[in-house]
Length: 380
Image (cartoon, rainbow, N blue to C red; front, side, top):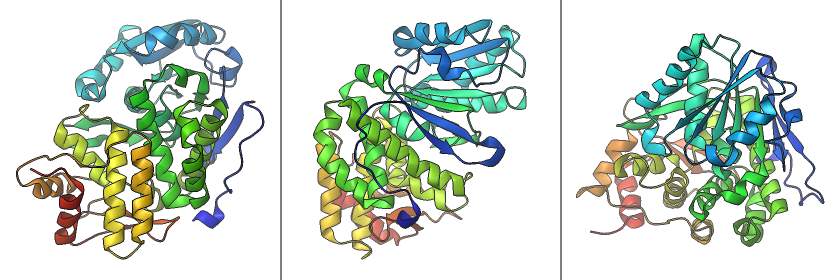
């Protein structure tokens, strides 16, 4: 896969807006990356017209950016509504999804109404699922305000809510009309959220582009300092890789599953701890360390690469030791991982580095997985 991807490029000398296209035939759309995009009416000039636009945001992001977006959208939409949801993964559920439908119906929104997801991955996933479902599908736009959402969750059309037994188990594939990655909004991102986003950036290196992994290691201080050029390149390269994969496998029939590197272990951590205790990126960062350990124990990579990835995850400010979820800790992890969407007939499938710079989805003996969990988790 790595050989067919565009190569990692050095940083561009300017921050002029850049585009990455998701090629899906009639469902194709651009990802626009740059500064000052969110509040610029020109950003949205090519969107479908409608009488109403609904901005779905949360109580943290809306006070910062909703007014800018509303003003920009008023040039195209006569009526611009705003819905603020509670912030956090704990609210990514049926009850809060219904609030979006309640708002749409209460305001008499028709099937041309355009939804705008202004927030991180939770808002994006919920707004997208509502758009997929309301009147059997209305247009929506992703305006991600976290690094994690800009490099991963806003791109590719996965929408969902959580179930108490499993993350993102109820949802739909539904592509947006546009993704707007405004780098300026990352200035207000808490440090913990910035680190969480870096997990999804790091993910792309070992599974798709080792040159990008080299770049991330070298650029990590600049990324943590929120250097605009470093962030621009990280977002663009991540989106290029994801666009390449999604363009070949929109509905995760095969290749797209590799983008879940670290997620099988990570989703178990999120569900086992209770949604919101660990950020998604924190769980994925730790999950990547565990997946690399499993890759090494299966003989797919050497110890040096597993150790290198662990150092990078830790340097990004992410946890590298999994939490204990139960007295039989490995048993609880296995129980939760059997609910992963990649599992088949109760057999857990893992995304493993195979070989470095590429990935494969494989099963592993339960006894070996238990050894990995024991080695990578906090002891009693």
